[in-house]
Length: 210
Image 1 (spheres, one colour):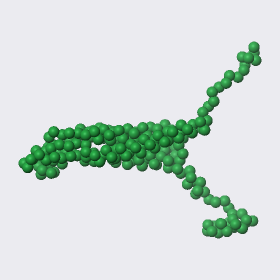
Image 2 (cartoon, helix red, strand yellow; image 1 turned 120 degrees about the vertical axis):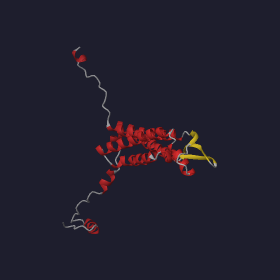
Image 3 (cartoon, one colour; image 1 turned 30 degrees about the horizontal axis):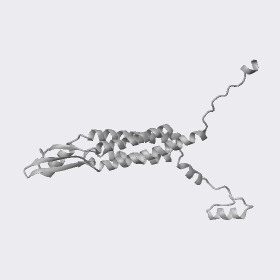
Image 4 (tube, helix red, strand yellow; image 1 turned 90 degrees about the vertical axis):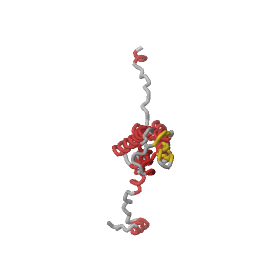
């Protein structure tokens, strides 16, 4: 009985780097897709009409529209920042990658906040009415708002999710700099007994006898 009780109980194997590779690839693909799509959506939405209305003037009703960029330039600017951060993730490692991932996450959060705040903002329309009519007191009546601010916010959510994925799985993603580090290593010293190595060293401008 002693031999039976002392038999080793099989233990679950620890997850190996090879087993983690598929999860890393999936998270990488998801972050790239979500980040690129989110930035594109936010940029597109910023160029669309967010609000419209008519201003009463002496010459009649003056129709005005306000695009996303007129209301706030934050979503478009942060979309570009987020896209740059998404690319920069692969050029840095360790702490640098974490910082860039945080920047990506904050870019998405900032787009969401700015788009939602601008969804009901009439200031841009009133400013356009005052400029077009020459009357500083002119305002827009019967303002209508579109869904584009919320579309921009959706793009920000996608960037935010990409940033969270980068924070969670980014340490397992490959780094772009590794290839360049290998290519920048100094070639091995020429072997004096191999004429071809001597000629290659001379072609590189090196002293093969040094």
